[in-house]
Image 1 (spheres, one colour):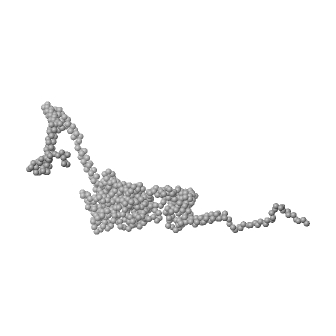
Image 2 (cartoon, helix red, strand yellow):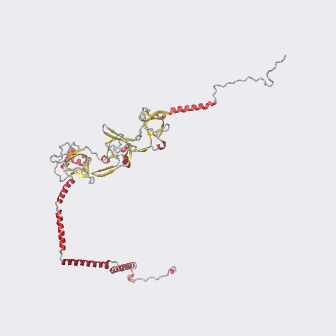
Image 3 (spheres, one colour):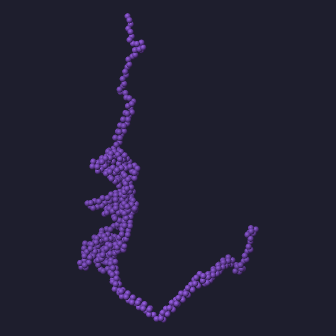
Length: 556
């Protein structure tokens, strides 16, 4: 039986075990995925940290987006970055710019109702130059933190920075004013020509017709403002030309350009405590009226003048022996039917308290009576007090009313029949001078100058005729007089040549004589000096001079 044949060729190796397929573990993570997973984890952590650190998102409305850039412009509070601008877009009506700002989580408390926002840019104004640092760093949004506890997400930004920030050391005061003058927000406030504050704002109430000015006095100058402080408008140049002459007053160059307010304390009140914030004061027009003593109640008076009041204006002073005790309030023209004249009635306010001790001395024990000032005025009129117009300045022609005692004034009394008492008046000195000048001119005009001129011409003609009719003897006498005068003139010329001329013999002789006298005086002076040194020579005579020794023999 034949053996089975092996179908495999001879070169085929013996049988090999079947391969085993190993399956990969699905739960095992490849090293390739570790890096992406770590990146995702870090990104998630950063995102979570950003979300945790991010504060509220607010929207601020501005009129323009000048200087604002998305993602670059910072929001700063006290120069510390607390947020950044995220979006800048127009409003629906395209009238405003809406700026989206993301605040930091630490600054979330700034988003309250009374917080104010503005764009800090370089600005030049009456308060000075601000925002110069933004020329390099760029504009940013400033914050004035509010004190409200109610949060808010939409704000209206300020176009200009607020002049007084919350928490700024200092105090704010209110001034009542009749006129703003050249004051503006930011105008300086001066004390003794030193800047101590600024104007924070002003308000005109149309209902009460009251103008108020808010001033901020910076720290540490608040104690300078006391209840007796006086404020006045120091704007520009205070140039006054009135009956007192020309007056020029100013505080500083800044107040000349931008206006300003000045204040002082009344003398004797330096130790008073500072006035609390919000105290109301009155803003006077000038320093003179501000620092004047208290006026007290005004006493209106009337004065009637029968002369021209040209040069007298409302506000002109009422002068009493050099003291200004009032001002003119009104002038009105009247008609006197009896005399057919047109007198001018002047109404003025006087302040009897300005008389000081005179008022107290004349009233005695009743200085506080209701009609005390009227009684005082009556006594002054009984003693000769009269109203008179006087010229205060000859250049401008301005006039003022003088209440003075006139010795030659006739008897008069204070007229109290009307609502306002009438003070008697007398003509001004200049008006009295005019009639006298007119009388002098009328007398001069009566002098017959024409007849005097004709008589003088006739006299000159007669004198000329008489000279022509002189006799020959008189003519000979005149010729002899002329020859005598010529001889005298020649003699004087000779005397001048012989005496005064430099080459005259007399002149030379006098010069020689003077020279001899000078030498004789010199010899006498030498003799006197010698006798003073050698008085014994008067008895013994002059000693002989020592022999002369050659120069070479001195050392031998």
